[in-house]
Amino acid sequence: MKVLLINKSDATGGAAVVTRRLMEALQAQGVDARMLVVERLTGSPSVGLAASRRASKVPFLAERLKIFLANGFNREHLFKVDTASDGLTLWCHPWVKEADVICLNWINQGMLSLRGIECIAAMGKPIVWTMHDMWNATGICHHAGACDGFKQECGNCHLLGKCSAAGDLSHKVWRKKNALYKKLPLHFVAVSRWLEGRCRCSSLMRDADISVIPNAFPFDDFDERPSVEPGEKLRIVMGAARLDDPIKGFPILIEATRQLRERDSELADRLELVTFGSIRNEELFKQLAISHVHHGMINDMQKIKEIYRSCHIVISTSLFETLPGTLIEGLAHGCLAVAFDRGGQRDIIENYHTGYLATIDDDTRQAARSIVKGIIWAVKHIDGAKYGVVTASHGECGHVPPYNISSDTYRSMLEKFSAPSVAKNYISLFEKLLSQTQRTLNK
Image (tube, rainbow, N blue to C red; front, side, top):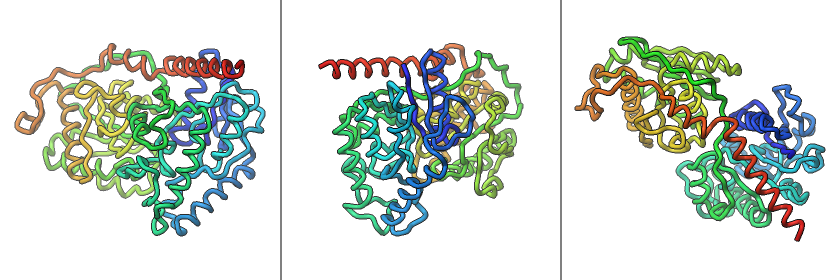
């Protein structure tokens, strides 16, 4: 079986990393898997360039120009939307011609147009489309947030500013996607149950053929962590491609550290925040009310693993997450997880056992207060005793035993997120679709 995975990059962004991991996982199961990209950074012989850099710029710039014209020359939201109006002629690429199955991933910003997808489908190959965000279920945005327009036919898109209207660009692209989905036998994969649920709410995808298969993650052999000594420094880790991306909710984390300091200065002195990833405004770090260490952008997975092993709590304050990989990686290395219950977090965290699912709120202080409760819950479970002001009068539980992630929990995570498990689920899907295609051809 020859499988070709198509993604804009093989290293930049979450979709790139997990798509490359899927390729490697499929290869480990004996599948001839390759990856086609427009940005090749890893040097893997299994990753090929879709076109030259110059050729790739043409559809990229053409799509951006059309969006720029349609949003009234608004730069603020220029890269928050995609239309798939322009793309490369990938159906002419030899790897596409040779493949038995095409697996689309993040194909925006001029890599593949909606028309291009139709051309690939005309070759008679099964197409699986792995969704890493909500773009397939909306007109043009990747995360709908509080907007319910995608439940109808989009239009009046706030990301188009003064050009927002009932028949605006978002509605026009919605119509094109709707026509494409009705015409082609596409099979979609949602990487979390939350994303599947959002798709089922969408007017575009409520009747679509959707499977739920999570992203694959590397796991080391299980190693029981030593108990934390009383008074030992407790480290909280947060990682992201860009920490101050608005969707990551870093202001909520800042506010949470302030509330922790106000609530119990002794506990705040004991905590240390460890971050990794890029950040545009480093001045934000000065607003944190607990000690902090920043490691910058890290591409070495071994170093990232060492950071997780040195920490006790993994945190995410993201407003929306499809399937937050940092939580999976942190749990796999023995951390407790604290995150908002909005997105794929519930697929990862077993509430009050392996982590704490906080309540999201539009008010930053209220949202931060729920994160603080989660941190205190985690500290109590790590310590195995009451600490400072952590008492029943504050709505917290009483004495709890020291926490160590159990081998049973680790085994459960392996079953869901390990590379072999994920690869086998994809292989079963590919085989089913190939069989269906063959039966159609034989009729």
